[in-house]
Structure formats: structure tokens, C-alpha cells
Image (cartoon, rainbow, N blue to C red; front, side):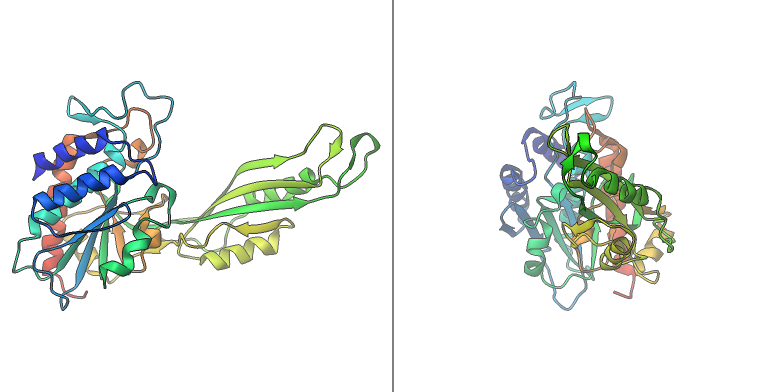
Length: 353
């Protein structure tokens, strides 16, 4: 399946599949699965399939990655939709994030789908809208897939095992002042009030530190205020990106922030929760047997939307994601398939699900 997976990845690169515009790559994935005799299910731009001898009495593992991409940035020197192989590099938009993981998981699923003696069920799901954490992605089909005991989420991690992942809060903050004429030193300048809160976001340190994910981090990423040069602004709005660990719930994090700042704070969502796998989960035994390096991931994935245990692992390197002239090594895909298969074989021998 290695060369078939690489050919599929090249075809995926050729098809633009920006978030919410993934219909044609969903078509391709469905056709590929059907050509390999899998019974395909689809909802919107999400495509999934169950192994042939699915047995509801067995534990179920989800093999999931996404087929949407960000838009190419202006730094590209190559055609982002033209797969090009140079010295084992496969260039193309989505090759690394997360096409390599997607086709590797698909090949792994097909490797096992005919196995009658497998003690596990497998579901492959190629999903949409991951790059925007959209509601029509993985979240929308979880009820349709039935009970899931564990998930391998495919993202570029150099095949290191992410056993925890930070969650995300995006906060819309507004500092309230009072309008006045700048020449007469009237009013209450909302910008000055915002500066005090922005300084707090820059310097505050949360008491609890995660053993796997480290400290929580807050960044002010957008600021807007003022209508004209001679009017003291009565509002200053700013946006804060908060990367949350499992040490605090999103609700607890918001409460702490509101206790310390004067501005109005409104979270855009509390859906993107931090995740972490229990220390007694069988995946830790598997990691030890296969010498998998474990780490806590600062980047967000569809794990944040999964209400069941999961880890993140895949071929490629997160540092290449969203960069100009994105690429993945072909050998990374081949090795990714081999290691995914070894992980499933090892989990099949483990108890405790």
C-alpha cells in the first residue's frame, strides 16, 4: 500500500481543498476506499469506513486525519497544487499537514480491514474543517460512528507520540472609556485602560503547571481603537489567544482572567478543550515497546473535539506546516505506514480498553 498511498497523496495535492471547500478531495477519498472494497459513509465533506469484520463487542479505534488545507501564502516559489518530487521531497500544499498522515492512516486501515482475527475494530475517517475547527468536521460525525474507545489522530509529529495537547481560548476583550476632545484633555481614554490589561496578559503566570504541557501561554494578537486623531476613544478592543493545559478547565481559565482585568471579556468558544491520555492507558505500554518518544503538543488538532481518549502521531514535521513550498519526505510516508501498523498490532495484543 505504500506506493498507492503516495500516489493518492499526489492526487490530493492537485485538488484545492481549503476549509469548507473540500468536496472534491472527499470524492477522491470515497472513490479510493470503494475501489478497495470498503463500504463508505459520508456526511458533508467527511468520509469514513468501518473494517469489514466489525464487531460491536470489541473495542474500537478511530484512525483520523483531515483533508482540508490552509490557503497558500505569498512566499510560494512552486505551484502549491503541482506535486513535485525532488530528492525524496514531495512538494505541494497539504503534503505535510496533514496529507502524509491521512494517506498513511488510510493505508493502515486497508492493511487490517480484511483481518478476521483482529481483536479490535477500526474506523478510518478523513474529515473536513480541521484548520478552522469548524462545526462541520469531525465533531459533526462523532454520533454517527458509534462508540469509540480510542483514537489515533494523524498530524505531522515526526512519528513522536503526543500524549497531551493544549486547548484554545480566543477572547474578544473591550476596554470601556469615555469619548472626549483630545485638545481639551477630556474623556477617559480606552486605549490607556486597555494597555493596563494587555500588560497583565503579557506578564501573568498561572499557578498550576502541567507535567506534560508546561505553562499556559497568553498572547494579545489584535488591537483596534479610535475613529479620528482628535477624539479620545471610548472603546479599545483586542483579541487574546490563550493556550490552555489540562491543569485548568476553559471555564476556570476565563474566571481567573475576569478576576484580574477591567475590560469586558467574551470567549468565542469553549469547545476546544485541552486533552491528555491517562497514565494507565495501554498506549503507554505500546510506546515503551516500540520506543516511541512521547511529548506534550502546543498545537491544536481535532483531538480538542473528541470526547474519548486519543493521541496524536504522524509522519512529517509540524515546523513545515503552513509554510511556503510545503513538503514531506516520501520515506516519512513509508515509515509512517509501517509504524502505524506496528502500533495497531501492539494495541491488538494489549488489554485494558
